[in-house]
Image (cartoon, rainbow, N blue to C red; front, side, top):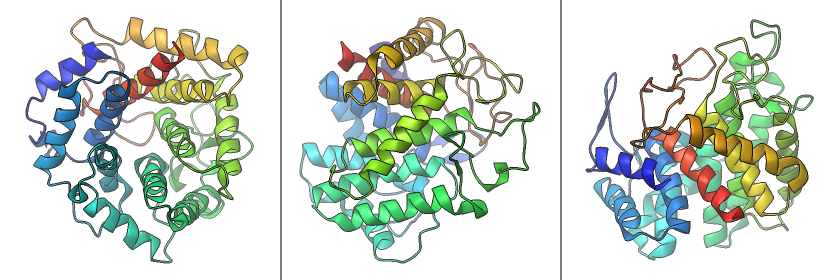
Length: 342
């Protein structure tokens, strides 16, 4: 983790520098915000001041603001709020939490609940609601969070984005059957399901067990964990398409890291059976360390941005994805939970 993170910090010595791919974007977009989730997790087990300073510098460069404005309802633009809130909990400075709170408060006060129409949004925003609910001891955040989650689960696309039969999620309405993968199976995108799995872990770690929907979140987490067992590759990774290994099949780090994070968290909390899940988790973590981490700290086998197996290709040890940040964030989240098992 230190190796991969140091490579990134050296490359991006100015955390406020815009990200240029096909166009220029500010560095508080979701891809970079996911990296900082991982960095804060690393800081949680490895209290190096430079990690904290790097996160604060990034936040200050963006004036603790969201990509568009404090009025946004876009989950991608709210992702940075997870780190802002973590930093607020370390140093209680009102400016750190002002804009993200305003954004979420606007959603809490409205009746609209169909914002999370793609499953990535669950990871990007749900833990923000949970954090604010705990900080302010205000269950309205939890209620709104569940409204958004349940609409995605049960309603989007007509019957919801969650397949209760397979215990996996379609990325958005475009992938609900009759859409099929080349082998005739449903399309369950690895990283998309990883986002949900990680979000459930991050939310359950904060949500009071007395919350009326706690057990539903917990059951969804357990069901997803069980569904991921038979589709793990023999080498420890997961394919980009969970039910079709022939559709752009091969090792993929970002989804694998998110699943590893969820498994390790579940083991640490005593939620998952160690006899069943610990070997799966160890196999996945060791595979990433052995096969994905370059000697200089670059992370290989990370699928580029997109929404389905064919996007962000090719995925290989040497191919560089369009964004080099979110894959590392997922890896750091995973490693931080694996380390706690030690």
